[in-house]
Image (cartoon, rainbow, N blue to C red; front, side):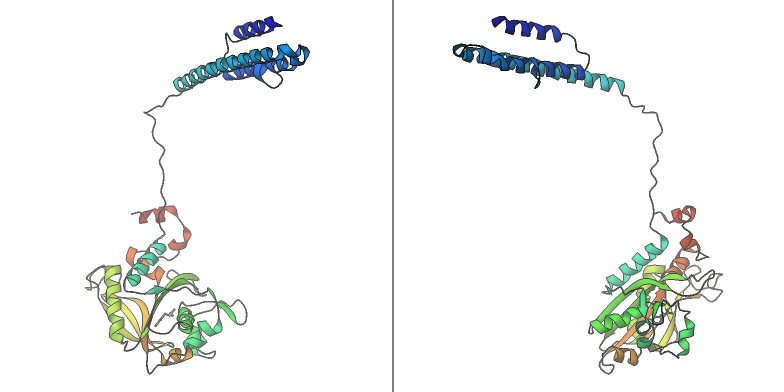
Length: 340
Ligand code: DAH
């Protein structure tokens, strides 16, 4: 029996001589040390020998097992190093190869202007409030002092979803939704998409608006203009000024149209401002008492101003874009001009 060990060891030594890769080495390990390997077979033979010899026999197998394991471990470590060295020598980097250019996207100009406006007004203490895009008639019109037969409804061609539901035509609906929930002092900015059946070089059926609302005691038109001046300086340059012209909106009284001094010619007259020195940018006014009443706010105690502007219009003015369609075509040649 004794020479079994010597034979096995000799066999291992013989087998161990040249392995070409770690697969061969693994197979050899399994042949000797695996579950159905030679060593396991030896353990099984313990039963064949007299009981008094078994402990010595067992020790011998264990010693052999340890030795084999140590040898294989050493061989595996060497094989690993050898294979790694081969792999590394086969891989090389061609430092003269041109790099792959990574193209980075840009924010859409409408998103840029929207973010900029939010920054400007948030800086003045406005909180952001977003209403739903599908509105009912009450919030979009009636509560804003525009009942069913009111001629001002013709100012905005409406997409109806059903008899009573529509795609909001103005973010002004956000005023009502907020005032129903919150008591003055109110300082809110409501950005969002609006929809109108309108389509030409400066109008699109979907566009973005930014609605502002301030309600508190003693709010006046002067507060409105002071805030608008700050807006104009931030968006169109620090020399910018605003002027108010009388206008009409059902939800404000008095109502105004707000012009900003032309940022291209500085007010002397050019093709952008059609020689007038001024550009119309938004509608505004003092919140109509009926609107406050509709929301349960006492108009004798509180007054407020509101304004609404088109984000696409501001973007077109600011960046000199002459057709609103450019903003929805997603032509990369157009969009990449807005890189920082
Ligand atoms: N909602 C108006 C529109 O879409 C814009 C507007 C005008 C909003 C005057 C206002 C405002 O809050 O006071 O044409």
